[in-house]
Length: 480
Image (cartoon, one colour):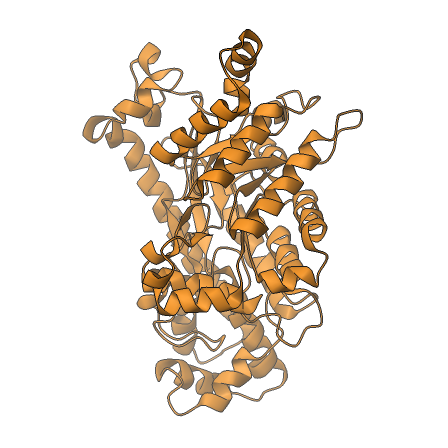
């Protein structure tokens, strides 16, 4: 947004027909009328210059003054030698506004997005042209058709059927469970790929994307829908979800059944089939292991192994018929309750019908008993398990304002953002609200009609969210 408007802003300021205060008012008016996604800051395609300008600060000020859901992102990258301090000042000010307002911008991270995108065979210069243009979407405006955040594979379902297969066998071991899990996961991914081939054939006929075609380079010139060869870059996404649910389940089985032999395979299957009825001690035994997010844990190793296999399924081959490129992701949006509603109990101690884990994040409560600032552990886990090809796997930081005062404040959060970017992270969504206020607003949303929170990649009035969506945010806060 700052790059697009800078020429007009500078011209009007120089000619005396516009003041900075008027510019802020105009931008705030735009945000008031259009809550679409915008981005400020970042690098030029060559990577040799920062685009942050005075206008970037005014756009940030407009969001801060408006105090309604505004979907603004800041591109974060490592400092460039010889460049001025403006990017760091912009980043620090955005964090200050988040602490003051309770919510703010999201952070689109250069290294994971641009370098990841280049692993698909594109020049890194194109990766730097990608902007955050949706809740979790990143794309080159007008040139890239990326079908993200719409197609998901619930990996916990593959685990469920793998366990059912193993239950029917006389010989049972962890290797066989892994083989059956991967068999079902592969079938799910191949099914989605076949669906994409069909999408490619019928979309232009049954549901042409007329508005999008008008704003893209190529469809009009070629006479082809953007989803059917009309644009040069067409990359289709499949999101694997429930990573922590599956990783913690494998780790619990490995520890409690295989190594410690505190449970037999038969007893494990009985617990799952009865939804842990009358077996709270055994359920907690499975749940209370060192879970994904705990450094050096079995669960963390399993998460990386699952991620690697899933990414290989997506990137190992294009779709069979039309050879369309698949880009793997690990984003669940807020649909973790919907995906868990019909799923039976899992070996990580999760009851049937409960939510699955969120995106590639550890489950809430993973850091209890660990003497480390939990946002750091969460950030490390999310960075470690990025899919790695340029699609966002977000980190959600929900921090009690009281905790900020004891943990270094603004500078600590700025350092955490930079560290996550350098570790390969792709997106950070942050809230800073007092735990007391959030719990009261959850109990009586109407008492706090102006409370705005960042849900995932988008912001919303807390009172406008369903009880389930509010509960996700409360659970994340309680975990932090």
